[in-house]
Length: 305
Ligand code: NCD
Image (cartoon, rainbow, N blue to C red):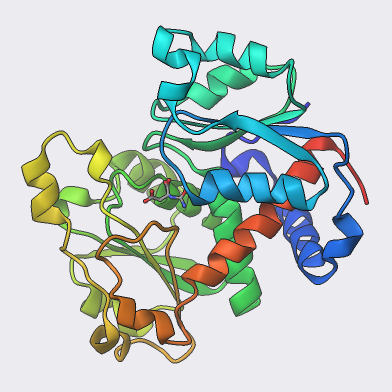
C-alpha cells in the first residue's frame, strides 16, 4: 500500500508517468468517468481549505466514486480529544482512500502508520503540501513544456509557506533549475531547506528582497500569501502582509513568456488587474489540480484504465 507524504515519494520517472496520466485525463475525461465506481474518498480537514479539499472531492466524483468527510476539526471528534491515530483507524473502515490536512507537522505521517487505506497528505502545518506540488509541476510542464532549464522566482512567505518547501524539494531533481528567493529578511526560506536541500545539492539560488530585482530573469514567478495563521503575533503579520504586491506595472518588467503561479488563496499579493494578463496562470493551475489529483487517486488505488 502506498501513501503520499512528501513530493519525493515518487521517483522522477513515476512523476512523469503521473503527469502523463493527468494530461491524458485532461484530454479524455470520459475514459475515466467510471474508473473509481464503488470507491470512497474521505477528506479529513483539521484546517481550513477551499481548493485542496474540494479538488480532491471533485477528482473522486469525476472518477465515478463517492466522498465523505469533515471540513474542520470542530465538527469531528478531535474537538472531544480524539487522537489522529484513532480517527484514522475509524475512517479507514468507511473509505478506500483518505486525504488529510492538519495544522501539526507530521500528523498525516502518524495517520499513515495507523491506516489500512492510502493516506494523502493534503498539507501538514508549515511542512509539506505534496498535492499542491503535483499541481504546480503539472502546470509548469503544461505551460512551459518542461521542468528543467527554468529560472523560478518564489515570492512571499518562504518561511512558513509549505507549498514553497515542497516545490523546491521537487524541482531540485531536474537539470538546470535556478531559484530566486524573493522575501523580506524575516520570512526567508528556513535554513534547513537552504542548507540541506539547495546547498547540499549545489543548486544555484539568489536571495533578494525586491520583486523588481528578480522579475526580468524569471520563467516562472510563484507568488505566495503571508501565512497569517502561523505568526506568533499580529503586529508582525501586519508589518509583513503587504511587503510584495504584484501589479500591472511590475508585470512590464517580466518576460513575455513568463507565467505567474499562486497556490491560492490570494490576499493582497497579486492585484486583481493582473488577472487579465495572459501570463496569469493561477486559475488554470486550479484546473490542473483536479486532473493531477484524479491521476493520484488512480495511482494510489492501483487502478489502471
Ligand atoms: C495553500 C496551503 O494551504 O498551504 N493553499 C492551497 O492548498 N492551495 C497556500 C496557502 O494557504 O497560502
